[in-house]
Amino acid sequence: MGYVSAVPPPRNDADAPDAPQAPDGRGGRRSVAVALLLGALGASVVLLASGRVWARGTAAVGGGSLPLTADGRAVTGLPAALAIVGLAALVAVFAVRGRSRLLVSALLALSGLGAALAAVLAADDRQALDAQAARTTADTAAQVGALTHTAWPYVTAAGGALILLAGLLALRFASRWPAMGGRYERDGSPRPRKAAVVDPDRPEDLWKALDRGEDPTR
Image 1 (cartoon, rainbow, N blue to C red):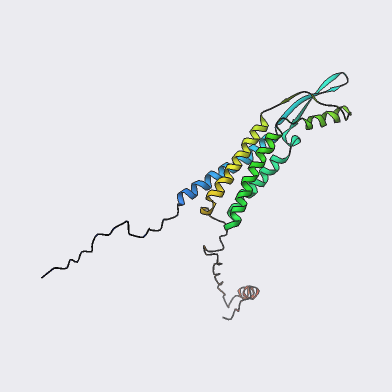
Image 2: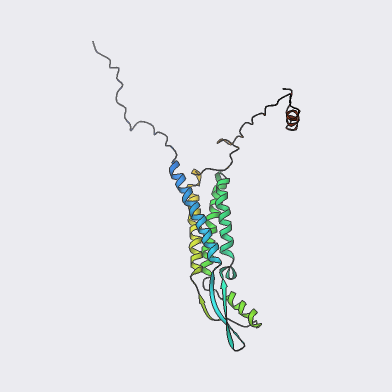
């Protein structure tokens, strides 16, 4: 007479269905922190460097020379404007979901790219100082002399590159990031509202219930 074993045969793990993987919460939190740091730091660098002197020169006035300087905003206001757009997009990433989050992340990346390119293209610009020389000498044909440029345009471009990196991180990992909206549950439905307790012996509670559209007699 044969015996039937109660012990089940060993299970082949290769045939077992894949177990669902838990979301990488730690990686999502780390990417959020890095993106926020890069975006805020990059925007701060762009705004700070745009206010520094980008070019120096001299204008001939009455047989002498007058020193002239032009900061980044006088040369081009585009990097500073795009840095502000990038900051707004960095905040808006957490206020939207789904495809809208991807669009805002792309706007963040493009803001950094545009700020960096605008700074590099204007690094050797002389129009701002020429215009300043024309105003100073009251001669529309006047041009600035002894023109030199500083390294601040490239510092501005580096700040734009940081914003660009923050946008690329958002494009890659934003689907794992949390979103604003504490009034709603995770499935998007509004949380049930607790009915306020009405004391029938207090007239002010009865009036408040009527104002809320509730029946105080219930």
